[in-house]
Image (cartoon, rainbow, N blue to C red; front, top):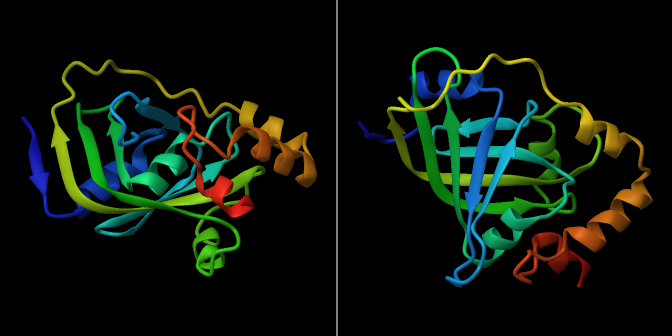
Length: 185
């Protein structure tokens, strides 16, 4: 059964904080564009208030979420219980990308640990909080975070990361500019 909540209540906050991963979904307005769904791990999510969350976004192969947020702001975060009682939690809202040059960067960045390859922070204002059963989600035992992305970023210097982002993170796969793409123009 789906259940709506007015905000991220304490019980849901506890559930979110126990999850080792979450998923982020976004989409362009153009119906022929690609819907994006990205898994996120590490300790990169913070609940800023009962209706606002943020996650530290590390350099990756694309930057779809940032491009979609710049175009239309729509974002959904999903958390699944892979251990314990079944549950799915979705946070629906409007998001934005915060880049290092933004006035609020220092305040937000201080909320997260040190990671190599940080490119931006995604902030989402939540307008709908919904749980559903998750009865068909399989159980998994958590074995640990993968070090691959961190190892990759640690092997690059600042100039190499900047060049990589310029080549791979300024436009979506549908050609929409990301916040990084707009910052360079």
